Length: 139
Image (tube, rainbow, N blue to C red; front, side):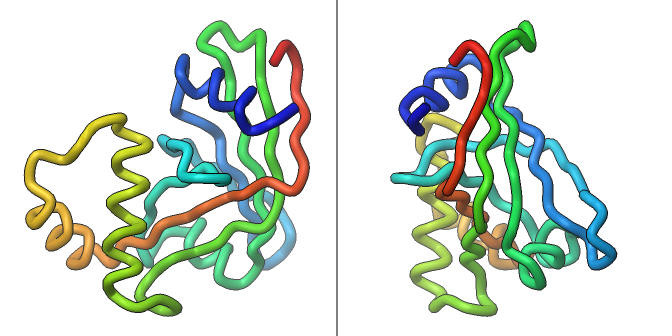
């Protein structure tokens, strides 16, 4: 299975189940809307979220992409890369957040300056998963 195969599933459903790990090792799952950004799948999150805190402590994560009828799926796992104010210059953060928006929304934002201001005020970061392992069914 390749990321191209997963991209085919994403054309049907971009909402995925994303898993990080709590401090005690138990999984924490969220539903997020993703898009393909180069060799990764990406989405945005903000500083107070559990997934953000979990990933800063432990980058291991997994993502399940499913067809709308739930008969086909792909699971991707690996270490996420968090691109945010804590580890990147403002321009890199701004451009990466824009790339994630374009990929997940499949369009340009109508007002990039407003988008930049809002995401900066919210303390948003981009989460990028370039999987080290993939498996699935029917893909």
